[in-house]
Length: 257
Image (cartoon, rainbow, N blue to C red):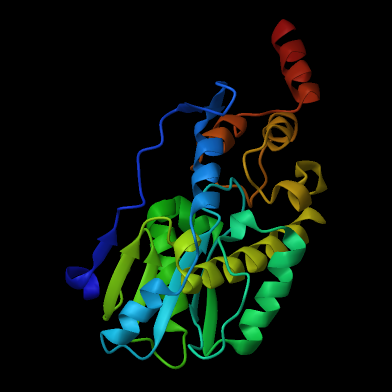
């Protein structure tokens, strides 16, 4: 396995505290601070060029999407970009408007040397946990690439695949290949979750994509989880004890007899 040869790019990484201050001296959340950091990073082919110069021919970027979601599968993508066909506008999928992501995904699918996506379903996530499910999804995506890559650029992970790998912190904001994989995975997963919205409209999946928004958590409290929710996640598990108010009232009435 290539993990023994894996390097970690850390000089742009830093610990993000629970709160930082904005220009006006106001405290901002950790998520806002992370978003600010990601926006400040430049997505280039620096890491791809280093891999090509080392002798690699087929460099694949690898990323996953959906780890933080309460609902549905986790999706990973792998992508080998063409060195002589630059796709402009690639960056971390989280920083792109939906319409732009969709356009870029179409360009990537058309112009990349190879690309693949893979899903790990909610049952498997609950069985092996989201960390291992994410690694599995990334491995499956890489294994589906034709031709087979000889060098992997992976966003903050090392996967079980026998070739040289480079683990890059914030890789989807720094590497064009990882950004492309991030976009493909995001567009693929969003389409899956939007389709489930027609089945479970009470959760607002078309807008929240299954993530832990206040509206989604409120819906979980009101309606309880569905079979596609990740039962191993705390907000879902807490809502799993839910019973309809009518049934609770009936039980109280029965106990009072």
